[in-house]
Amino acid sequence: MRKPFTQVAAVLSAAVLLSGCAGGYHAIQPERITSYQPAGPAGAAVDFSYRYSALLTNGANKKYVKKERKRGYQIVAVQLRNNTANEFNFSRDLELTFGDRPIQPVSSMQASQDLKQGVAIYLLYVLLNFNVGTYTTVNGQITEDNRTFIPTGPFIAGGNMLGASAANKNMRNELARYDLTNKVLQPGETVYGIVALRETNVAPLKLTLRNSAATAPATAPAPAVVPNASGQ
Image: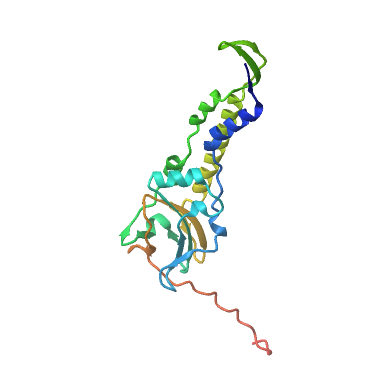
């Protein structure tokens, strides 16, 4: 009895097993978001707006969204503008409120550690090798074997591990770049950030000045004095 083991069967098997391969990271790029939700009254010392589901802004980011939900996070893109003549330190002078209670964002380092996708798990693909060809059996014993062993496993495992590591690095670098911890807002400056909140649900966000933060409205420069025609 002749039993073919064709390359088509091998490809189909691989397609099933690779359904859980490494995922990439699509950058949030908060400065390019155009659909922020404003929060706070007009004319506030610091204008504040935000957007939940930031990981879905420019792509699926399935691996990271899954970790976000599993670990109880909300990744939020934010926009701030300092409307005063004073500088503010985000951590010292401003207070973020989630619903009706103050909340402290998680550091970018901790958030990236909690949200990263696994890398070592893809070592299991080392076992994903194939024999391509045909063989003949007689009474259950192989009498002729024309199959060729193809060691695909190490390549699949290595590719997934490299892909997962690169995606984790891109995610970690972006969270660090837009981390607002101790970020100083200069007078008139607009700043974009990404904040990681340990919350399973969503609620309105608000940003207010702490009591110790003094404010002064931004002042326009005095107009230049133009001499009259007589030169006086």
